Image 1 (cartoon, rainbow, N blue to C red):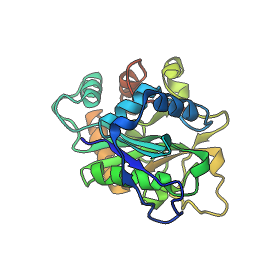
Image 2 (spheres, rainbow, N blue to C red; image 1 turned 60 degrees about the horizontal axis):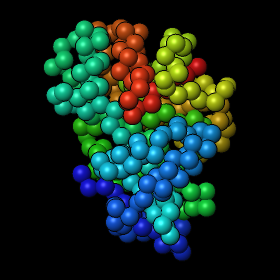
Image 3 (cartoon, one colour; image 1 turned 135 degrees about the horizontal axis):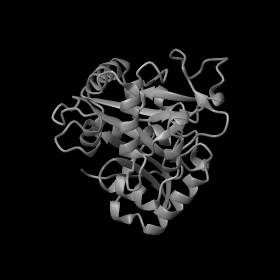
Length: 269
């Protein structure tokens, strides 16, 4: 797939549709990737990733980059967690772990927006939204589901894309692909990611991003691109695991809480 690399003019207006121009992929230097990784690592609510991981996602077509004056000013990736194709690492590993038929893989691809960052000087100019749109058009059709955990409300972009908040326990087999309870897997948590102290999983109904009283900062929220697809996938995953959520979560941890995997599983609670 063609990498998604765009140039933004330094005087670009703050509009609903930010103008993006194609930019040569090979113009992104190793130093630019290293600087991006350092900037993202300094953000309290973001999962840190090595520069090589950020670059690899972009090169494979799973990340979009915005550049201005030879600096990366925006980055976001829509990375595959599991693909419904024979031999896919995630489904193959998990189905074997739950003693299910490896040929009985789910019918839905699962993606996660992860590693999204905008240069502080460019925040409020819809850089993040502009980068997510081509990724969503590329991957999130009716055979795919986007999921993601977000601490607080660092951005309203997912809401603008039509995503909704679900309680973590409303589709537990699906949400476990993003996060599992810390108390059940404390020994493996060092290989994953933990939210800031005091942040808890949100278990309430869907809420609009501009809700006047919701305390976003107190929770880690589970977002999905389409609730009906999430419900369908949850039924398929529950059937694979014969309804055993603990067994399913242990299989997910075995697949992702190890070195060499690009998906960072969160450990909540």
